[in-house]
Image 1 (cartoon, rainbow, N blue to C red):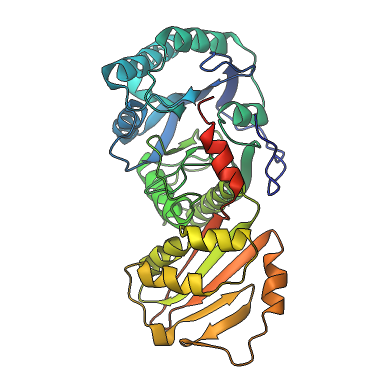
Image 2 (image 1 turned 90 degrees about the vertical axis):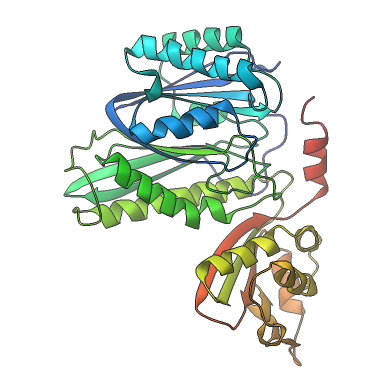
Length: 408
């Protein structure tokens, strides 16, 4: 990967084998780089699938087909192309995706609708069908690889491989969840974000898996932002092979459903945080906690207004305790707020309470907090019980440098 690892990077975790999941990677050569750029995941027959996708109206054919195919609830394979998003490429882009689906479906003797394809990278360049076909052929013939190899292969401007794992006890059986994700810029989700893939050996009905993934997404992936830009290709897919042998989960009345739901949300939160930690040019990880809103959704929108503010993000980058910029962002959010009830704090130290600067406010602890890598901003609107936490990163010169030469 071209850029140095983010200072906020986390080591790749030890991730166990998931029954019914086989990972392979190959080099399709979508860009002139000396690395694998095609990931192939084979899934056991009967694997359940659920997904959430971007709402960007200029989405790729991969998103359109994935959104349609996820409704049938079953999956046999996943192919991820890195270096070319295949978005805004018309019929040629769609033909390339359908060709990959047909190639893999023929290999597995399954329906094309059970083959999911994602692509990430430069917009506006059709995915070359010859390279894709050769890449898939090479992947099918390659030896199985590690989770970390797969995580590295799906990346583009990512500076470190991102993975997470969790477990839950479901009906007396221990089930495992493993996940990989890519994402560094163009991160402001609306239904989903980046390219993220969750794999579990839990047996679960596709409809219930979809309900749980949608709910977890709303509190995790849809609560992060790097730069306020929603990608054309954002996709999160969850695959459940059933290899753990538990009685299939069909709803919250099933034994262990609560435990599985908690583990799924935990792994989604881990992934979401990793993406923010790899925000392009990021030096600081920022948690914006909003309380006292009229609803949780309103709190989330206020939090995102703060997290997306270039003035707030550059102030944090410069370690400037300029709480007035947070006031500004609250006011522009378009959500209910009362200037005279608003309270602002950093790192647990209140700067202003109920519309006024504190008479005994001491900036020293706030300044010390802002010199760290883990930053917290607290906002209390004083209006109700709504609350939410949103995660972002600071905005530095590095973001400009990375994106100015992205196509080179």
